[in-house]
Image (tube, rainbow over all chains, first blue to last red; front, top):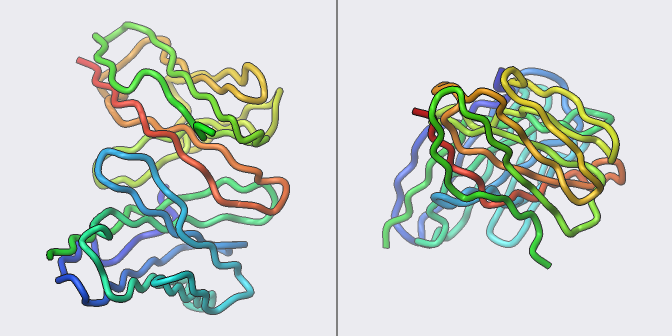
Length: 111
Length: 114
């Protein structure tokens, strides 16, 4: 069964706007990761946040994690057309890392 | 470095046929994974190999077998293909035991079973 569910399922914005997508999960985790998938391609790792962290930044990406609410958010600032892709959250438990992926958010950034 | 490579890129099978999907990584990772991706379902883990010589079932293993041929290669076999196995298959690798949890994905194999 899916661990994470992303919200919204689809998001359409203009270039320069910020994009926020959310992920909720069900069980305790060791870390939460975000991946990007361009159409017809494999997934690419974006950022990892550990369960003892609340916020993390990487370039135009900002990730937050609220373990009490079992939720995370990914913020992409100043979006570009090249950010158009599907974004997935994935959770990992302690020990060996079998990731469980959410269902994804499809982001469309229009020029 | 090629990263994770998969062959073939596309395949069409008839129900009951068999085939093997190949995956190789050149990053010296210990762990490898096979996922399937269906529309609206995200990725689901079929099988994984935590280290060379070991394989374990994931969430959806029925109808599949795997072989960890060596540290680089991890193959997925469909013995008797069914239309329900129409999907996009991704192989991934990671260094899960060394605290580096990110996974690296191949480009995928698009399989259609008629």
